[in-house]
Image (cartoon, rainbow, N blue to C red; front, top):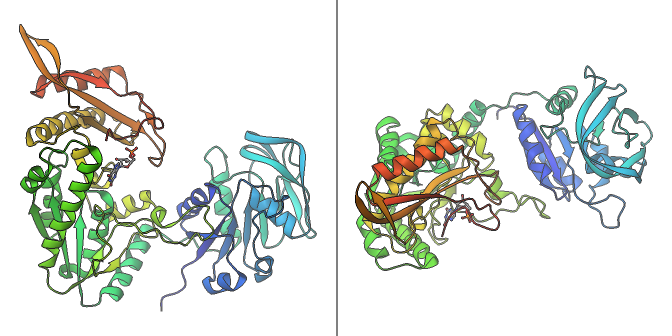
Length: 508
Ligand code: XMP
């Protein structure tokens, strides 16, 4: 067996922080995973982590039933870093005192460094990000206070193997936050060797071991997750992988061709390209209700995928682009609980395949980095999220080939202009929507009666909430004039300035 890969466990106390902490540790080149704070000492011993981070959380350690860790974990001699709630928990569980102090601290706060191992070499005065109403007023025996703030007398404290900070080193507003995390890894003797190359090597051997001489199939959607999963599996098992690409006709301009070009021609992957546009258009004839439309597209997709993959003899493995955020239920009792998740347009549960999920431990930005390392083009690696039903939910009302052609052109211009303005990577999703109405206009001396086109562009972190993007007027103007001049059938352009909530990102 290869030597042990250092792993940091981030104990989750029910807030959003755990994911961010795990990402920061990974940025410092150490693999980290989020686990439930309820993990027992035996489970921890079995996992054998190189270090443990206790994350922040929304509760007060002083209330009954506040989440704690198995106290025997402190006796394992594993390096521990407590952050915010985690720092207070260390104080509380090891015999210090946590009180509600004279005032809470929220946001930017000045930290005064006194000394100690963790903050060695850092400026005596620095900005940190705080969010607490309780604070540690007495550190446990054997600990020394290493920093303070106006309202937190023990803003950092440490003993031999346990370090604690009241502030949030994981947020970018904390000036020396990443340095502090890296320093903790270094003083804990944890080697920082985890890179995307090591992920690729590790996954290649895991895939080979799982699949053996078997045959695997992978549904390509055109999106980054299935693309990177396919490229990685192909690197591992070569021609034992067959990809299936169902072209629904509802993709963006040139996207279908690009999938074929990238996978078949450039990567040399065996690809079954199913041109199913006509089947989709005939199925969608007359359907106007959004959910009926979604269902129709989903069902037909599965039927066609089954038909295509059924022809691949002895295929026992199905590759899926499941990511780490898909499987962690942040704040749940059992963080390792797996959500059933299907990236390929929702494949049915009863397909008798064993799943191969080489990206299941990675965050989205890490998946992109793996994709780049595997030589996938930027257009795929940095592709925006795209709904499974594609342009079907961006054409309000009945979907017809003519409307798809109009929308593809307008949508292309929206993204092209954003790219030219250098704004494409700042924007979460940008696209055009074609509503089911027409309005009167005038072009030259002619009266026109055409479709309006709605531009939708949003900024977001995770699609749960979103804000409309503040695209400069001149960029909106170029989009508008190009769409009207270049896309026959559209005579008016409007910009959607609705955030989510109350709106959704998509129009249907
Ligand atoms: P909404 O419109 O709900 O979208 O704000 C949130 C995110 O989900 C994507 N989306 C979908 N993705 N199948 C998908 O695979 C769908 O039916 C679907 N509907 C919305 C949307 O593009 C956004 O990123």
